[in-house]
Length: 442
Image 1 (cartoon, rainbow, N blue to C red):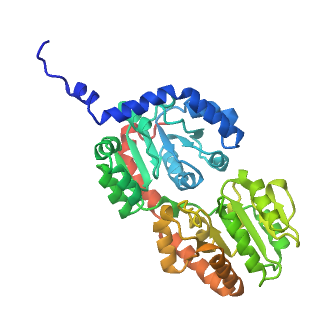
Image 2 (cartoon, rainbow, N blue to C red; image 1 turned 180 degrees about the vertical axis):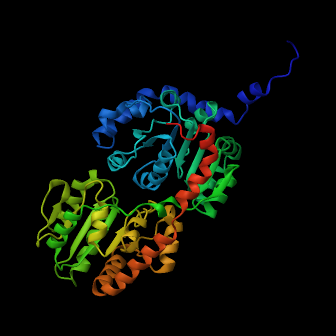
């Protein structure tokens, strides 16, 4: 009728803050061929599973369990390990879970670790056609995202279907918050789609509030509640026998640019420690051959786990390029350097070696793990090293003074134990959403 006022829905459809998202979703509809090409390239690089290609485009490879289902998304191995206790808790409450991750490493690591009622899928790309196919099949009653995965098409698709979205173990740095606040209306519009954020720390909580999340609570860091990493006890005894009384240390979760520094440190340490054995576990096992080349170019003798090469008395560097065995190597070495910290990559979770009572060294760059490292450093469980010279000096000291290594390891283990409790707080905070979904749904 002429002169009629537009409805609220009509006004919202053309709100200025909607325009960037409409463009984003429109590009997503057109991006199918490009995403297919990029997926093919990643398959060739060993970063995607060709047999499960459809999952990345929302095509399910498994049937949906009956009853109430929760979608849980964790980007990679660290987030997946943190959320697994929550997944178990959800299944114990009678809900099914589809757990999505984005990396081959995480898919391998989660094998045989999911409880009955939970299945794994690769997360679909953040393009509306794939997200809609995913939601059509799985029909989740609740979506739970770990840490800092903010995907506009996914958030908007969940909102259209009135599926609650909760961020758990929420992480947002001041830098990320400042970036969002450069586009405040867009940020407020996007983050209003989050029904609850359970932040790791008060700083993270405040940053989420600043960008527009209305309901924010501090639940603590789920990574403190992770279980002690598993180890094959027979393999552990074989390795201990092969190492004997040789001095040994571990560089864990290393990235390009760090392996060279670890090898440089090895040379300096070996000058004062006859028979030194350095263990290197690259963050991405697919890099094993590349790291081997670095070691061999330094004139060192290397044995590679993925090739089943034996550790002998002549081995200088043992390359631990397999999946799911970090618990084994954390138990072999009294000293561990945690990677992604000598390069500006954010740092990796140090709580697994801490639970094993291992003295921890880190480079100066660990913004993604700042809360944990601040506590470890304050309690004497971790020490910051700047470059290969300081890394070599600290490792040498801890090898010469095993009692200092033991004390630091004990301090790290104490911090790991004192931080527990986030899983219970997270499940308690999810209960109102779970009641809406229907407790005991299976």
